[in-house]
Image (cartoon, rainbow, N blue to C red; front, side):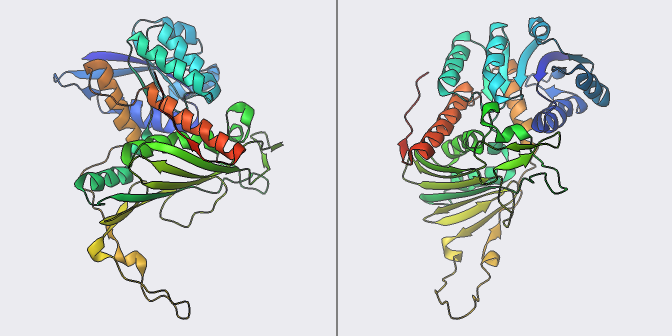
Length: 382
């Protein structure tokens, strides 16, 4: 059995722990490794690294992880570990990835890769010039619901795509009346890399680019709807960055996308995120896992009449797209793709260049909000 050593940094946070450590890396271990094209099994051997030794030791014992450390330099110096992964804070990420590249490690990371576009571009250029493999998580492309949208698109179901409408978000409790907040306080502090525009426009960039057409222009309005929240220590703090974003995008090919993102919205839809795609021949609505479609021959013909109750049950006029395959955890699927890219030189389209494009759209979204105008999204040069 071959071995692949992976340095995991920042896996004590919610996403790093649940999706990357438990449901991806440890899932590979529990299934006996990854079977390579040669038929050989690849053992995944992680080392978890963080500043809090007690947390690292507790995590290692809980999950029977053999290796943990608080010394990142020593971990990067170990030639037996090939990949460095970061899911820590945005403000630390670019410097950590740069150090890992200097140490000769392939790098994989969460997004955003930075809060500054020039830093992101320089990092992508450094990774390209190093000859090492590099990648950024694009998890929403691997959601079953969005994979079904891609299947409909590839089949020609939509005809010409006209518009995309997305609704993302849920109510994040303020923490001041008995229900604790379900997101960390740094999300609401600009100086700590918080803000929903920086967070979510990075996601919407790769979703739109890969599924519906490259983003050519953006108009974005942000808001800080909840000005004060309670932190992890039970103390009030001022929220000085956006907790909601209302954005419109012009896409290559003529489609228009509108996506609302909010941590101050109550959910009355099928999922925490939904995308409706309308085309000349058909439409579809997808959530995280499910997808419903309506072809033009099955489209009802409503008549506007405000004087009587609506007689059509519009929900019943849509058909669910069936599960024609088994969908594994999306983070795990992308992890396997990147590992095969490193070990077998398999195709990989999501390098740090994609991460820089996400930062670019977030930066332009913030600028659009500040200047109250549309902005073009120029091509980046690496």
